[in-house]
View: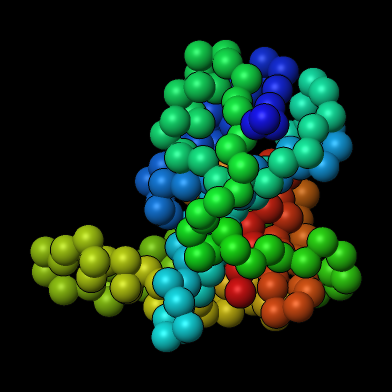
Length: 204
């Protein structure tokens, strides 16, 4: 039997907006994990393709409270999930059989140590600079593959003493995760987590 992701109307609407923004990036898949009444949605901004890929893995994540406790860990198509949420349907989470490489390795659940706080205005400046650096690295009329390579090279850079990367700054702005409070940056096991008001961005 498949587990069910059951959300209230507000959580459903919030996730639809997040998925609309995330659809521009990544590979079109979403990982959903729950063990209790909170579901964690994770989708890649960009992800390592294997052992020979030295580029970054950058994941955006949002936790949502469910109407009823459930336990699941599955990967679904982003477009299908967004459509179901828009229609007000509860979501069946398939058993984890095959999954993309990015979803096979989870960030740590504990052991996160504070690395620093970054003001929202600074994050926005870093995101703007990252976008400028990507454009400066591109030839005239680049194809999609060339643009992605340039983005990955820029996004991997650490741009703040806290360990925040350019890709995380770009994602925090693009996903509208920033609020008035500083972004909290923590690290554990080779991962860096940037926590904003409306979601988190994890990188390694």
